[in-house]
Length: 376
Image 1 (cartoon, rainbow, N blue to C red):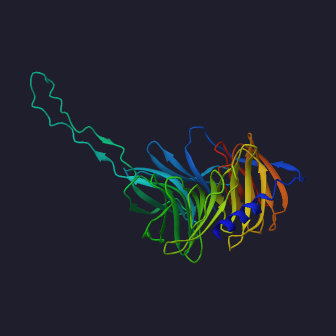
Image 2 (image 1 turned 120 degrees about the vertical axis):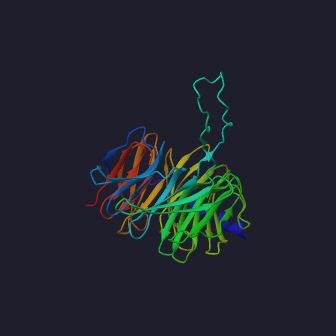
Image 3 (image 1 turned 120 degrees about the horizontal axis):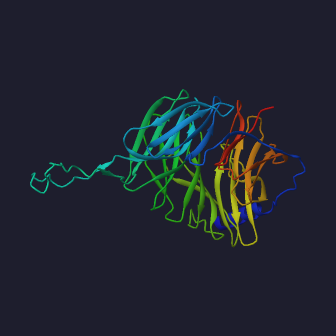
């Protein structure tokens, strides 16, 4: 039965090819050029600022930018531990939550100091050899206020290195997905840093790239896999997966987006279940955008010839956006609530993150610049 459902969904998702775009293509405005040596892990767009977060050789950071790209404030993390920041999200108050992995440095005892002899006429003391970078086994959350002040750090010790890939926050708590060598991980937390029981999702061939937290405490996990979920077997070389997890946590629903001979993935999503991803096969490389209903059935879908995955965002007036790259040329497509294209814009590079707020409009981060589609 599950196999039949998966095949039907695969056929539905394969019907729609890239539509012809007749609207004029207007270049987006560059808000800020990004220095080549700046390590940025992600971008968030709030009502008061654009936030960039990432890592430096001496620690992590989050910075707030004004509309003109100038710096509003910078918050640096320097708690003398080894760590990396890899994902972020905003809560209902606009505060910034960052996820990563951390561990305290491990001191290596040096040799016992020898007694001064003729071989050591200067009396040099040989001390500890210092510290080495340990395994980053602690899943870590940091909270920073809209004013740039640290407001909390919370850790979940694990038995193996971990790398968070996405988190989603609402009033009921936090949902987070992460990579581990033994398989992808899903875990929840309340808003004061109390973690729930981790759930292993798949084995070594499953990756989770995005999570959406629902108001009832359940979560939608997105990524790709070759593995079996709820008797839902693989269709293509690698399928995009949509997995629903209840508040227990327990996997309660699974869907696959796959085609014979193709590799697919879902890596971007909005809270209204607009999904962005890619499809790669011998004849085609496509950015895929599909709007799903609350029952996880697709309502509309489009595909565009592309050399990148699609990243998606919602606006505040029922329109939605998808951005993708094709051989260095970036395209932003604006859809109405029914999936009809109502505008297109251009930019340079590959979209890495997109975000929307009423104050800033839509922003796209490419690794080399931040582009903006302002509010009219």
